[in-house]
Image (cartoon, rainbow, N blue to C red; front, side, top):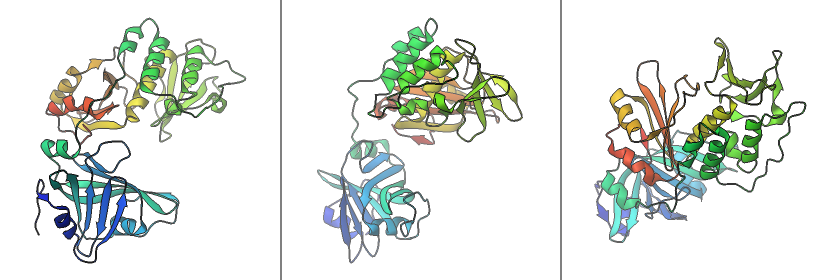
Length: 369
């Protein structure tokens, strides 16, 4: 039976797409049917970070744990290693994606297995690419829009010039909730910890993500003194460079040491650098994102005009040109590219605050609004 996106089917008709000898299994919020002709996944119209269903117009998430037959059908035999991901599908049978609505099961399209995560040999998560991309109208049906109760505000911006550490504290406390994990007291014998870093580590004590997700700042016990007296305290994610500071200064300058470039100074001293670092890492670790690596100037202008600029010189990583822009619950950065275009990355605490950026005509590569 040929089906197209937006078609409404009864649950029985949806299951029949799987063909004969159907094996059914349930996961949280979804039914998975494995038949001789196809795999059929029918999900409830829910939205959340760890729930099965439509994630965005191009992506469908399936959360487990899932029985072995599902992992074999989508990705081949389970791996030997306990934690593993793969992007190669071994079975050619189609995967039909549907969402269960009061009026019937609405057909979304075909899902192409794209990524898997295993734990102890069991498939715990699968991402599937939806083809064709969902229209906004269909997306709002199968992933009903919602509004957040509260959003991190921008009060910290007012303190950036007079008190960068107060701005850092307000930003971190607004964006990153404390966790039960305790990193303990930060000590750095034989060095004194400069005040900006002491404040930062106090904030990070119950917020491990503050130390970095993309790049990392080392806890003080992992600092290393170099022959020139500078302290290595941070690392680029692929080991391309280290961040350094002079321990004799109360608010020291921050330097990048990268092979082939020599020492380069960050534009902001440590107190300002730590706020920029926290902005970047909070953006990278945000649950909802928008991304484009080659924005033309007109699209950069539309994006930045819709947000509030962070009024400092750019962060030197990744390309000496990283400018930040913010809105309540939103952090964006733009970085100039060698070929003349600009890359843009946006992170948000709730997908609803990305929606206005979806109306700017920007051809996002990935958009979670």
